[in-house]
Each structure stands twice: as structure tokens, then as C-alpha cells.
Image (cartoon, rainbow, N blue to C red; front, side, top):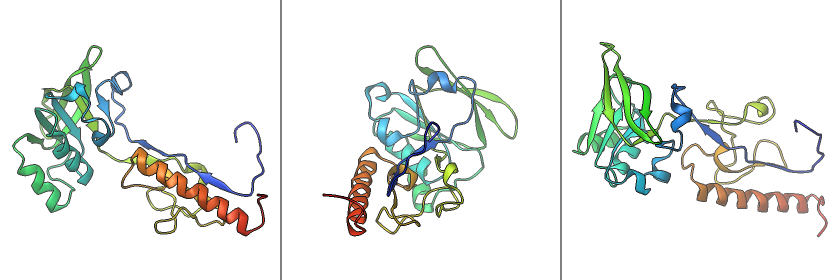
Length: 218
């Protein structure tokens, strides 16, 4: 670690993943005060009920979250940097067919404004550089996550996005005795309940491995 060397027979890596951010001036100020990186987690909270909301992104996750938020918000603005969605045709169709979603093409989020809570978003059209304001009480980032695995590169098998590669449906990694749990190895679900479940599997797998190799005393 940063403070000491620990000798161990087995390790469970559960360092998680960080939501990608835009680095806006007021981003830190309003994080968790209107900004969230998980609509499924936070979209149903009272602060967002019957309010105008916004989602940043153009992939499947962004479309899924925009559709999900229409269950709670009065209207959802989908801010897309390009002139088309990267999402699958099925997910895109769900967005286009939903009257509660407005897609803002070639749009960049410039900053967030408000007092104690988000009140509006400052956006800019990429082709004209014209700035506009959108009223919104909630902003949801759907621009991806970065797994916390930089310290593992060259030691474990990691995919092109930085996630630890494990055996299908199991916590084993490319090194015997090393297991992974939670978002560090999960780029799809990213939920507390699934992370806890994978942590349980990893702990049981580690205990079994230690026992099978006569490395644990019962």
C-alpha cells in the first residue's frame, strides 16, 4: 500500500470505477446537488419528481436513462454532442417515440447554474457556437466510467477499457488467488446490489482457493 507492505496468500480487488466527468466550472459544486452519474439509482428521489431533467450522452446508457427518467420527471432533455445517436436502433427508437424527451443535437454542456441546487444548464450549439439555457433540476451523466485499475496494468489481464477480465460469471482473474469484485470488473450493471453479490462470490471463491491449496487453517 502507500504506507506498508502486506504479505498475503490471496487478494480480492474491489477498487470500483469512477464516473467520467466534464470538468465544468460548477461541476464539483453541484455534484450530488442535482448532478448524478446514475439515473437508475437517483432518478426516483423526491427532488427530481415532476421536474425538468437532462441527460448527457448519446449511447445506449444515455438513451436508457432518458427513457427511465420520464417516469418521474416532467420532461427530459437529452444532450448529444454529435448529429446522431451511438445507441442501438432499438434504444434510439424508444427515445424518438417518447414525447417527453427532447434531443438536442450537436450540443455541448458549458456549465451548470443554480444556488443550493441546480436550476439551469448553459449549453452551446457546436455548429453555430450559440449559447442557450435549459431549465433543469437534475443532470445525469451517461458518458461512461473509468475503472480504477491503473496500478494493475502489466500485472493482471485487463480489457481495452481498463476493466479486469474475469472468468465468465465468476470472480477469478488471470492470476491464481487473485479475485475481482464490483464495478472494477463490471461495465454493464454498476449497481450496489450486484457489486455486493459479486463481493460475496469473490470472498467464497478466495476461501475455497485457500482451503484447496492448504493455505488456511479452519
